[in-house]
Image (tube, rainbow, N blue to C red):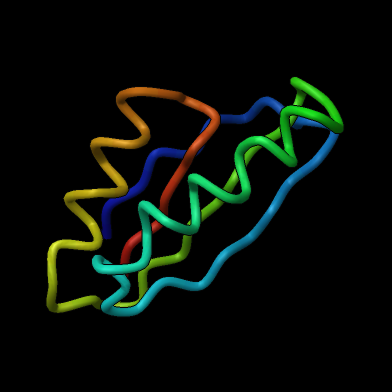
Length: 75
């Protein structure tokens, strides 16, 4: 089990299921990040990777490294 979760509680949490979504992840984040930032800077996106066999987890790790508010949990 791999994760990037902290104990801080943000004002807004978006929980997103992920399964073999590597082709759509960039589009998803390109669309959702401006909306979250318009609402508040105190947000997190928690991506739950349910055993993807593509490079979804690698992309989530990269996104987390770029912005710690993008978090993941991988099974």
